[in-house]
Image (cartoon, rainbow, N blue to C red; front, side):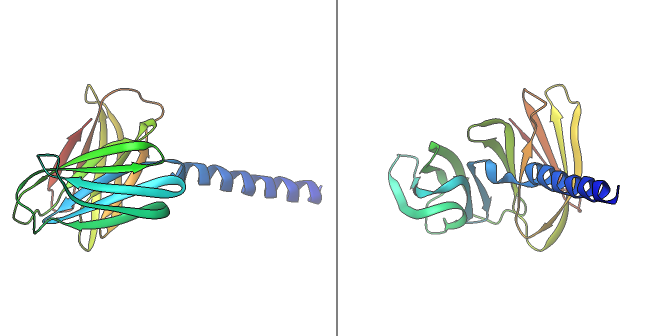
Amino acid sequence: MKKFLSIAAAMMIFSSTMFAGIIENPSASTGMAVMKNGSTVKLFYKGTRPTDVKISILDATNKVVYGETIKNVDGFIRPYNFSNLKEGEYTIELLGENGLQVERVNYRFGKVEKLANVMHVAGEPNKYILTVANKGHEVLTVKIYDSIGTLLYNQKEEAEGDFARVYNLENYKGAVTFEVTDSNGVAKTLSL
């Protein structure tokens, strides 16, 4: 009987560890996101396997103002300084294992106090990546609503510096709205 209980306990621990890893491990998701804070634009990338990734930044006339290739990576966070560029619309293109991914950035002079961005994870129609520019410690309240305003998710998130998290809404299909509120009550609403 003791042997049976020991085996059952070991199986429960193993299965709960495996299940928790599946829920909490965003490594199976791939995609890119950008977050702008003042003149700095951070590019977040997550792939499923190491590969070469080509990044191009284009101005409003589609002229390449910066380009680089990062070799053999499966993920990174990379800051780009726009302070020497003119104000205007810029396009960041990332060519990686999932093909071409594109993000647009509206660069304006001046400091942005808090900025959030949400987008679909490439190849995963019900997964979203939320990024929030932040300095220091912050408690963010993240709420996700469906297209008719029904609350799907409501959670406080601890952030130490910039915040990024993948949200899996596999049980919901349709348009969503993210509402992010900081501890000072500053709210940002983002719709997809």
